[in-house]
Length: 365
Image 1: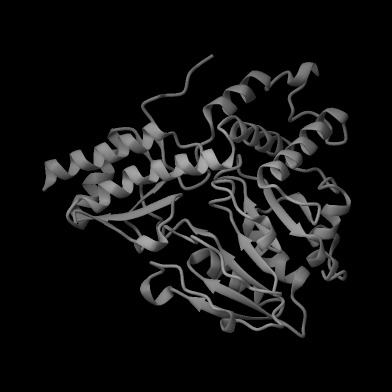
Image 2: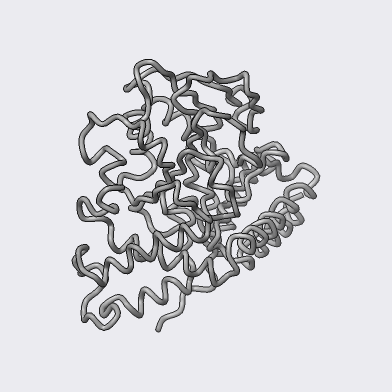
């Protein structure tokens, strides 16, 4: 078996790094899955063999997050971006408004899609400070009759992350966790719905996970197309049509890998250590590197920063590529640098980046 190039450090924002052990297992099973003589990509999604893969992935996700029977877990397609439309289509009524907490580009896109289906408003926003922080939320910043409050838990472009979530009382809280799902333990009971594209921490692109509380589903609009109704996926166990079978297989293997790492508490501890290497290099650089996010809003998944000036920043990114660091360019809309340190990014990659940053500073100060 050919080993991965150990001189490449993958900091891509998504699709992003997958655990090497998972990729190697998929390689071993690619042409003959469990003695079937077929790839998992060739199995019928109605077969018992695939059904075990499918249900096993759901079961592991429920176990890792300690999800109660009050919730349904479904697999969808169309990425988190399709959820921007499906959520208001299912849950926003003519008599209610939807409240959106604005923390970056993805919350902006979610808000824009909602206005096609009903009335939405900004609960709070940190746009005025270039999305450097997470806004503070109090109970009087939203309406008791709101259909739901929506937020994005981690902001890939700006490098901010919610450290704790607001109490929305009886108003359902819906959260896009695409870029930090399964990165730490959470209390699922705080949320009416969690959704996430898989391509950051859960697997390859093409699969979307939704965790939806049953009482929210009971209130959902019944007069919408079947493929856009969450109830369809619940009723058919996400098998109403052909699901992304290989992606779900990979997602299940990533969840097994998380279990083998010691679960979410162990993953969270490792993520904190990984991020600290890079943040320490920024904070101890005497201004050579400048972090975009305020310290109390910093993300453990996406570390955004600038180099002292534009000329040095271009040089830094060019030399980083030569050293094997992949994906350090900031998002095209904001520029700068970004290191995405998702679950599968190994500790040694973050340590290597920290050392490279220190060496670059010493050579160019």
